[in-house]
Length: 115
Length: 111
Image 1 (cartoon, rainbow over the protein chains, first blue to last red):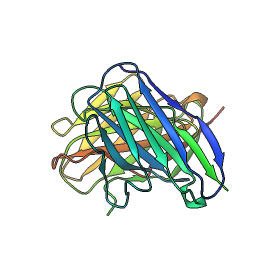
Image 2 (tube, chains in turn yellow, green; image 1 turned 180 degrees about the vertical axis):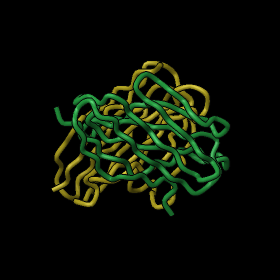
Image 3 (cartoon, chains in turn orange, blue; image 1 turned 90 degrees about the vertical axis):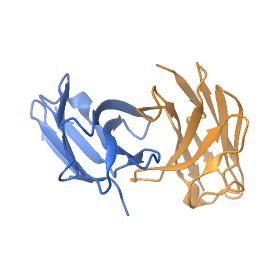
């Protein structure tokens, strides 16, 4: 199954700045997903990154706050913009592990703390 | 409303004991999956059970699914300290929406 490399693994950022998280997959995948996991909470889907088109955002998430790039079938970035302490979370990149939606493979996550 | 709700929220047991975690959901599903997360890192897929299956085994894991009660359980037998992690259920709804994750159970296995 695909191997996903996500970086940075953690960062501490100042309020008002932006952080870009990178996700690299060792094989071509159709869809890549970005999740947020707030402290002690479950995973919430932010958006689906589609190659060649704009990302599809879930309710409550907007492109201005979480711009996503998907330049090819193996790479995507998520930017957390104009950060506030409420953005402190783990951000996870994920891809379909096989048949559509059968299972998900996850990157190791980015632990973000905003001061 | 929350699709997947798990109980208990936290479970602490001794090595060698069995651990049982439960997941309830609200809508019709195609399948239900269990994932494990170590210390806030990436999730690892453990097992998938389809809506027409009632029980599935994988090593020390046993998963049951009761679609009439909209519930599932994950049993880890002969637990080890290395099983300490958070366990999440996730459901794929028949509506075709993305996987919806439950709140998770924090399992601690004491040596």
